Amino acid sequence: MSDFPFGFGPPPEEPEDGKDGDTPDGKGSGSGSGSGSGSGGPANPFNFGFGGIPGMPGGSGGSGNPLEGLFGAMNPGDLGAAFQQLGQMLSFDGGPVNWDLAKDIARQAVVQETEGGSKDRSVGESERTAVAEAVRLADLWLDSATSFPSGASSAVAWSRAEWIEATLPAWKELVDPVAERVATAMGGVVPEEMQAMAGPLLGVMRSMGGAMFGTQIGQALGALAAEVVGSTDVGLPLGPAGKAALLPQNIDAFGEGLSVPTDEIRLYLALREAAHQRLFNHVPWLRQHLFGAVEAYARGIKVDASRLEDLVGQIDPSNPESMQEAMSGGLFQPEDTPEQKAALARLETALALVEGWVDAVVHAAAAPHLPHAPALRETLRRRRASGGPAEQTFATLVGLELRPRRLRDASRLWASLSDARGTDGRDALWQHPDMLPTAKDLDDPDGFVHGADSPAGEDAIDFSKLDEMLGRAAAANEKNDEDDKNDDEGKA
Image (cartoon, rainbow, N blue to C red; front, top):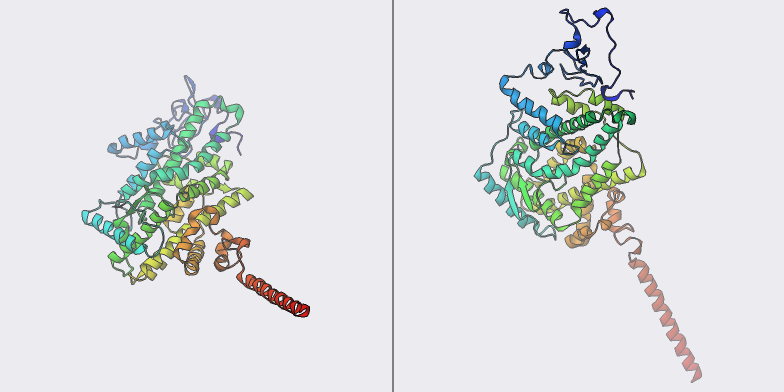
């Protein structure tokens, strides 16, 4: 790590005879970029660098106008929005993430025309009616596949922008623990003896960190909003409780090239959304269990301080894409400790159990009614296994990559439980987290369902041994009766 993090360093040496400090036009540099000295001393006395911001101290360009490099290429009509965004970045003091900036960037992303995609549009009345009917019918079909009653009090059709607005509170809960680790690390890389002197600049650094996260999250959510088909694509309850939501525009895009009628695709996805709603609404501890696992995992994340120092030196507000690329390049390093491994296993297993249960239940409900249900099931599985948008965004925002193979293992386990114990016995395992299968059980579903590792554990009754005991007891009783009879005859 540098002795002078974030560009702090000694003042530049005075040029000899005024020659080295001359610019090509013959003027001194004191009135230019701030790297020299003017009448009031050095314009940048701490050499605080904004590397990558043309025209700013520590940046490139050396323009006499410090904003020329940042805004010179913009149209005059864009300057107001640019100044507003810059003001948001540097004045934000509301936590580790600038969520206002994140929401603005995400909403801007979905209204822009993209290569190979389409921009967001409003949801038509006919689409709202179709979604409501699909969820209603899906709930009827699910009644025979699970013991949990309906969990959706309403069904809504969202645009991409509406998805962003509705899910933002859940993303805050997921991302803030990780962002707080980074914010703490940003202050920690400044030497303690310099923190008092650099007090105001530390506040600027925190604002810049919040802006970095806000930019990254905004772009990630904007991209995800163009892909998701409902409110539970990542296996977590992102939307309001009891509100089943589908995105008609994205459903149309999902169905392109599948040769499956749109109505059937909508029904299958409505089954998945309604199944998630049943599970989360009738297992009250599940939401906090999942979000608590994310937070526990985040607490064990180690931030690469040297990487963070390099990152801050590369910040370029005029190029948000460079921020996202820089922050996704290995900033988070999970600690290799038993606690961190346990948190990771707990989170991966919990998500796999949720997704596996939904997969098994939806398959049972859809198979009698939807001819293309197996093909749609496999399409969604492959989408997850190939590292689809949900997994990529989750990994970017939380620093965690899910293991798609766990989905198939969990689905097979729930299906086996349903065959062995019925839907009531299968769903009863959700009564308490300690009753759920573990990561080890996902490796051996049949062993969990039928073996000693079943929920009854070692206390399970072995009926074969019980039969042997009863047989021996019966034989002993017969022998005792025979002996008593012989004794009575001898006495007579």
